Amino acid sequence: MKKTLITLLSCLLISSAFGGNLLTETFEYGNHDLEKPIGWTCDDNSWLCGYLEKDHNRVPHSGNWYAFTDADEAWMFMPVYLISGIRYHFSCWAITDGQFDLSFWAGSAPDPEHMETLLLEGSVEGGNYERFTSYLETIPENSDIIGVRAVKHNGTFLTIDDIDIDMVVQYDFQAREISRDTVMIPGTQATFYYWVQNTGYDPLDIYMHASNEYFTNVQYDVNGSNSNVFPIEPNETVVVSATATLKPEIEPGSVTWLDIHLTIPCGCNTALVTFWVTPVSSIDAVSENEVPLGVFPNPAKDFVTIEAEGLTEVSLIDATGKTLSSHAAEGNSIRLDIRDLKPGIYFISAKTRSTSAFVKPILKM
Image 1 (cartoon, rainbow, N blue to C red):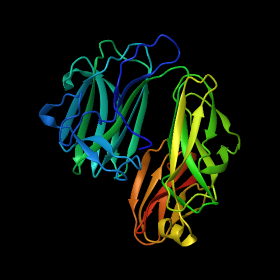
Image 2 (cartoon, helix red, strand yellow):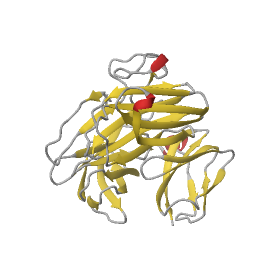
Image 3 (tube, rainbow, N blue to C red):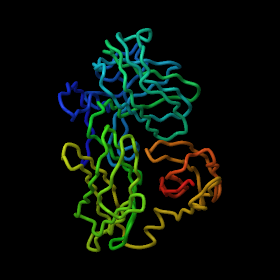
Image 4 (cartoon, rainbow, N blue to C red):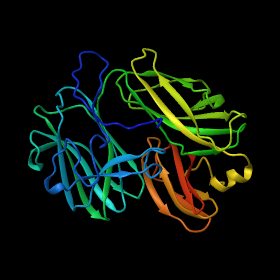
């Protein structure tokens, strides 16, 4: 498998401007179904591990371990030494079939009474994976334990995955795909979307380079600029579109992908986004997998209408990949109220009776 998720637990001391990752927990290492996550402490096994086969989770084309709970209130704890005076970035992905409150804490002992510092919190709902992130500049001393708390309001379960705790350093950034899997005819073009976030505390110049195994003529667009390099400020998130041509000689039915490598001039940090593409031989084959999606007006200020044949669900996603709202749909159109959104770029993810999710960007004025 081209992309494999592994669990890495490492505590790093920092002596320069280039820090590292303190915790990446994808719940994969040494776990089995219905056992508590390795390395975590939880009373009464209120958190357990599960496994999903490929194409049934947030990362396409790979199997995936996760942690889940169905308790009314559940805690789990892990020793992670947080250094006072160093800034940290926290993130986690979560999904539920109902509504749960999810929060992350730091404290001096593995029990709720000693969880003193709130690191990250949010409400999980809507049936789609949501990404929760936060920055924390002040960590009290003796914060040797992190705790994860879930509180059920309704529904059956809460699933979490990819917990990341990163030291915020001088030169650091992240990138993640927004577009879903794509069906293409060899020789045609498609546009792929991803976001880039500056997680360090200095401005950066991001350079982009695409792989050429299956695609040619890659053109980038960042805020109207067509360059393969762009500036990004600390804490800023930028949405990038890359338009590429699938090579005419690619065989229909094969598995192809577009890799876009991102780096900064010092070479001290890199990132990779991957878009999976299935080549097909005819327009009919494309129409069976991708229904035309209409989004108008675009740009929009107050309301936006989404049209596609056989709509079943529509979600509104922000530039970081977080699902802001999800709506069940019947028929061929649905109207969304976007008056409360801040101006910027958002994404509409739509599902129909004959397709999986597909995505289009909208500009909120």
